[in-house]
Image (cartoon, rainbow, N blue to C red; front, side, top):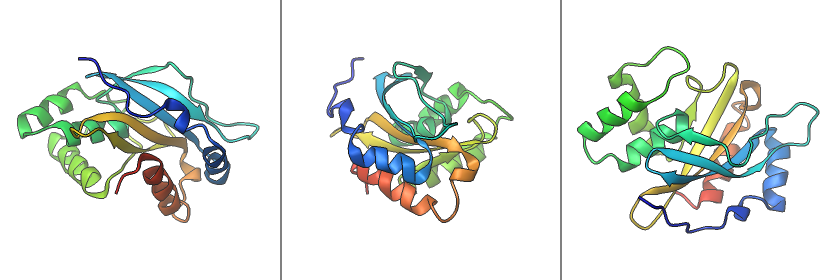
Length: 171
């Protein structure tokens, strides 16, 4: 199933995004849904630091993975059968959560409009994700902030979430 592009990938790469990566110290990534089960990084901005995480444009990821995968599963699963299928296809780097715990996390993610992930991110890293949906409520892009756990401090997290939601024009 082809996915229609409804925003330009260069939207992410602007002066404000570069400033945001510096402020938060994290890599900000725009990923496009190219197939039902695949997203591809189409734009990336990283902080100007001696050591910083960078995301390679063109990298492909399996959809039921991490924060973005939970958002996609929650937004697009119309019933528990579809949600269970998404759970069974989820890739885990560490211990697999029970379906009940995972489904509860998905519901929380949808309620608040973002997902934050530590269990499927590399050890010591966090991924924060917000969805960009089309007029049919299908996730066409995700915007992620990815970086070392210490850059996701309680002081900065609310501003980081607000910034990503503004980029995605969500709630």
